[in-house]
Length: 550
Image (tube, rainbow, N blue to C red; front, side, top):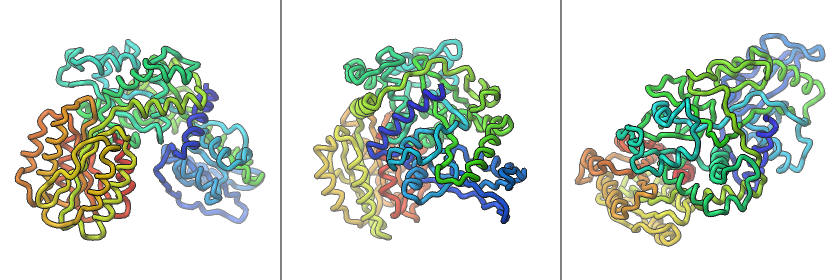
């Protein structure tokens, strides 16, 4: 089964690579403190993905303290944390020299081989260190209302609840409102792409042989559209959703696809309400973590790497990995805590696996998701008060807005409000394709001057969105400001009170190193979103990530 999932991930990553996309866009590096290496010692290096940091840092230290020998020399291991996509890029460019590479999935090696046109860049047939399946995380009381754990739950059950106008009232829980869920972007997330493919398998009642023709059928397209109606918002990565679920609890969303290890980590924080893992009855996928020895390592280094691998596969090492929430790759190690119901998982799941689709099917699935995702109405609310002239803030903000606009789907409705001493609608809501030229012109025409009418501007954006009366879309206000309100007619309590039971979400960006964040944080907490803090050096990246919410 491990070989099957590796094959599936290889196809996914090759598709992403061909499209110029990286499944892990965030660069994360951390060099462990260098060990003391004697003249007769043999030094090997290992580069690992961030989710394995805690486990491998401890294992490296323990290994180095055991005076392990290989070919008559003491083996010393030096570790470095680096995001999988970044490591692949640096290896390809000759910027990273490492004896061993362990990305989040063995697929990255296949991508590296293809991109470098070097099929022998690493030793053949790397073995896995640990495994973790993809699950749908759901609040335990909500899962129990749907029949968990006695009844298997799947996409069809979620769809029925999304379409039920009673929402959770169907189960006597009117206070929970309508079923809602979150979804990361399959352009950059393997978990998200696995989720989309699982939805399409479910739409066709298949567990194998999914075809482009299946995906292009109207019933498949409609299935994606119907599931999307339950989306609260999209996102760039799992961490944001997990953090918001910790902060806002059941009031945030009902469910979210994530890796099993992420769910276990969530429940280890002893939340007021735990999550449980739903392994969709229609089937799911698994992600693995390989131990890759690079071909340019010396014979002595390769021998030492083999010794280190054996150490990592020992029951002691595998049990320590399991304590972090991984499933052991060593088949002789029995599953144990935290892979138990106490932490919301079922060690006997998943029972159903889905067959690997070919690359053309994956491309069709990505296109189907893009064409049938939940559309959005977005009001951009941009601060043009006098303080925005400091530190090149206004020019950088214009750059960020441009990045944001270029990334939004053309069918999304986008408008703009500018505010200083008073707010004004600069561009009324219309499709991005219709409004693009005017949005760009108005953005470039912003001149910093005057005071800050933040609350009045947000209230004006609310009115513009409510006038559309389109609850079948994500309705959102994106606010860029560097300071507290100084000129509004409304107080913050009056402004927030005007939202009532509205589903409109507010996404505030506190801009600049000197930004006053307390008020914007209060607004984010009210809307159950997150406050994003940016500076003139990263505002374009912030807007790029934010665009993935819609």
